[in-house]
Amino acid sequence: MKDNVTQRTFTVRALIVLQFLLGLGAVISGGLFIIAPDGRPMQMPLYMLRNTPFATFLLPAMLLFTFVGIYPLIVAYSLFARPSWIRLDLLNPFKIMYRGWTASLVAGVILIIWICVQVIMFGSVSFLHVLYFVWGVAILLLTLNQRVRETYSSKHPKLA
Image (cartoon, rainbow, N blue to C red; front, side, top):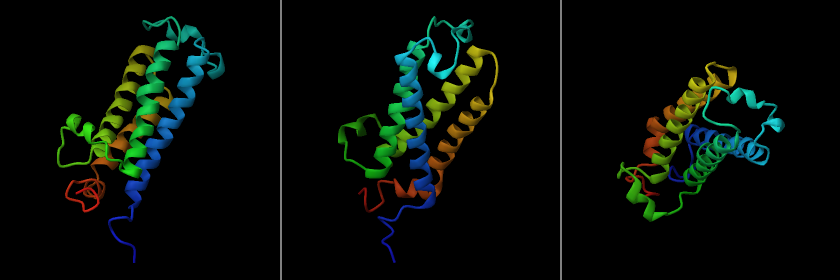
């Protein structure tokens, strides 16, 4: 029988996969918009930005790349490898929880805010908005799941 300390539950693995896929997709799409801020590679015309404060996709792409891309990739790595980035504990308001768990919660909130702002700015809702909103909620629910909390609690033998 595997040791419970090293065995990852399905919910923990699902959370890591959701964070990784979210980050990967946002890095790719954000990167494409950074390379071509006119939106052509993603087939998104500039007129989509008419009700926003942006003339091109460059600034939104940089935000997407960083906060919805790089950040969840770091979160996924943190949840998977559990590196000891001690200095980040200063930013962790939940001292009894591993910093990666807190970062996962933040990533879910960032995604939900990102989608809500898009819906407000574009003035419409698409399938992708609904999908990513649900994705953000799923990240929050998985992060708050009891088994996930137990896995990343500072009382857990691997993290103590």
